[in-house]
Image (cartoon, rainbow, N blue to C red; front, side, top):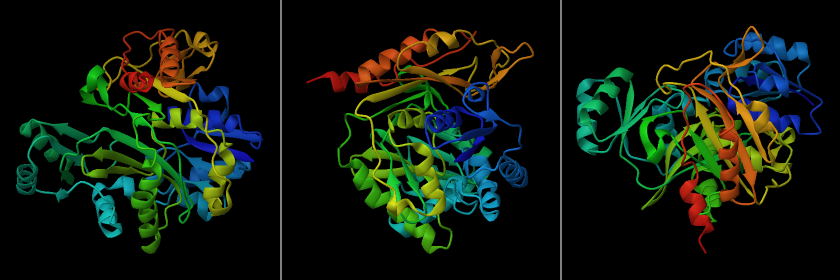
Length: 419
């Protein structure tokens, strides 16, 4: 199978790495890719938001499967353009991707499907914003209705800060705060059959101890030793399948990756948000544990044959990923700094680098080109070992002004180690 992956972040590097290990993949391409992806796939320039350009590239390469990684091309209808040409594609239509593209649309779908979620108000005026903030009280949860690359949500006890963010959004969703730990659960679907993957937990705040501003994600781990063993089945029945069924009922079937961000509250599981694609950095740890070859799974979703796909196989071990971010992230990041130490990480056992915001400079050196620059992912027989290996790799990376969290999976590893 010839596969073309669209995107250029750590999520796409993780996808490309797994696809490169799949014996059924005879040719692997990525557009536009990054410095790390270029080591496992042939990279091509493309405007990822231009459906016609993506189709032209796919046809030129003879691609038999196109995997659309990021949310912006999905919302822009790139998967539709590929699908219309008869090329199997992994990724939802623009209409179905509104599940991520509009928080208000997602709330409407959940209400129709009886999916448990936070109570919320959709606001467009200062008066509506003030009324909603007053109705829920602190802590305030304010979400930009549109795409915001994981950074459009503010959770704060400061009503002035909440109001300022809400006013800056235009159309905004204000909802009740959900207590309890958060879980990310991915599911592959062809619009009818839903195949859940293994759960993961990510860390959104920039600093240790969940302090600092929200980011796109600073690290993740899987499995979750503290989670109920029945969690995945419960979420499949109460959240994932009803959502997919409701979208199909509306005439906008969802085919691709459905990502449920969940809160395990004192009142049960509640959906925080849906995404229409693999999440970064959770993809890194989930794919690190998946033993089933990836291309066949994604192709089955793209061709409507998931019902006959064999059960997924998983590693019994654990995976941890730690994100290395550039100076000033999540503010305006500094770019162009040389990254050193990458070969030393690759020489480690059971640890590797997945590139996000990287590029090659005129001298061929790998340099920073974004906020989240790379992630070090490691596996091991348990969380403590995987965590130790990940941080051993992070210690070898040298990037001026960079920062990373030092507490990824710390509590989970400690709790798993206790008898």
